[in-house]
Image 1 (spheres, rainbow, N blue to C red):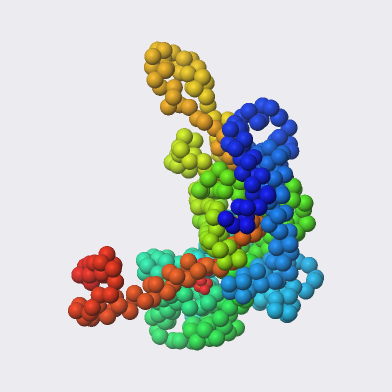
Image 2 (image 1 turned 45 degrees about the vertical axis):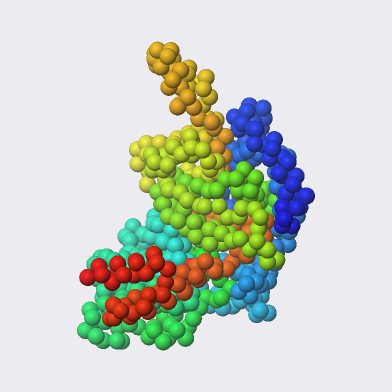
Amino acid sequence: MSSLTLSPAWNALKKHHSDASQWKLRELFTEDSARADRYQAEACGLHLDYSKNLIQDQTLGLLRSLMAQAGVEAARDAMFRGDKINFTEKRAVLHTALRYQGSDPILADGEDVMPKVRAVLEKMRVFCDRVRSGAWKGHTGKPIRHVVNIGIGGSDLGPVMITEALRPYANDASGERRIVVYFVSNVDGTHLAEILREVELDQTLFLVASKTFTTQETMTNAHSARKALLQAMGGDASAVAKHFAALSTNIPAVKAFGIDPDNAFEFWDWVGGRYSCWSAIGLPIALFIGFENFHAFLRGAYAMDTHFREAPSEKNLPMILASLGVWYTDFFGAETHGIFPYDQYLHRLAAYLQQADMESNGKFMTRSGERVDYPTGPIIWGEPGTNGQHSFYQLIHQGTRLISSDFIAPMQSQNPMGDHHRILMANCFAQTEALMVGKTLAEAEAELRQQGLPEAEIKSLAPYKVFEGSRPTNTIVMSKLTPETLGALVALYEHKIFVQGVIWDVNSYDQMGVELGKQLAKALLGEMEAGEKDASIPLKHDASTNALLQYYWKNRK
Ligand code: G6Q
């Protein structure tokens, strides 16, 4: 047994769960009408209603004991202090330094990182202003209109999600959107080819976004993009300096690629890929929405950092969300957690959080080197509402699995249009209510009776119309989705993931599973190439992989 499952707080929760598993959420609301007032918290422009969860005061007390026992506050302080909490990679975890607005030094390896953080931000500001104002000219003297970010994983998902979320902020004072951003991530040539069809190369800036500057997909796409540019520029290599910039920790590799070091925006190994949208990796965001808006996004995250460090656990948004997640994952056996933003601009939020959460807490080894004997990170998934309602919500309402979820909604639309926003919000609130309340057999029968159905049919049909309810949800609302509130929202989830990692005793900051993928494909690539030239090479794999290789060789043309 692990020390976590042997611990007093865990066992108290286990015992408490045998009661909690009998609770009906609608009864909890009837018995205690004040729970909606009690189970809410607010910070940084975000309001969290967590009353529609399978909790009572005792549950929250026990979850707080679990966090105290796990040493969440000490671990949090160690992260902010720059301790090497990513112990497998011997690195500090300091994405919070990238958005720090105070004046204290922040040390990594004994060095204050803030001067270099601020220097890169200033370089980004100057570059953004030049590109957005049209002062930066391409090789043929034309200003930049298209920005193509080439990156994958952490060097793609954040910028994609955030530029989509903040599209209303991309217009300049005259209401014109000068810069259009595109993202190429997949090594499938189709991704780059389709974007090359959209852009005019003499007005295009490619950003090669790669922490390591060795990732196969990104380097393959970057080399192909450079080839396309040079072809369009009559082979003049000096065009690269006007049309390529790099976002990386590996400046020697950037130079070796041929990118002018003046166009290199650096970050550091204490920034994890999936936590890097606040760093130079955020350059496509800043180019799209302007540096001032990007800075507001950083400030929103800093406000959440301060809240996370200072708010007591009963009011601390990341701690509340994290402990509720542990409650469902480890005691109710929930395997997934849904993310349902009722805002079309947040349509990539679930994909972004999928990486942030699953790559961080999808781990089975504890920090002390044992295998866990409890479930860790859940499967994260979701789509924006109301679209999801017309597909998978069926399973949440009437399926056999318990699914917890977050509903996220701004009260103001960025595009007021007739009744649209009222309808959107009505759907959001109606869903969380229905998931909580459910519908009993008696209620289903009464409804059918009102419709005038014969009694025999009512009896046979009603069971299919029963909703058990008690499906737990959090509702996170804000007045408007702005750079600040989005920054706070992203930081909220980062810290939620951190707290869960501490409770589960895993290293949330390495990613051996992702690195495995990087090694595997490289090894097979050489063999595939050799086999194309010589069909008689000996096959070294299992029978299934060998057969797939043969199928590829036979059908590739
Ligand atoms: C993120 C992961 C991973 C990484 C990509 C791209 O935390 O480590 O998604 O961001 O593999 O890596 P590079 O930025 O080094 O190209």
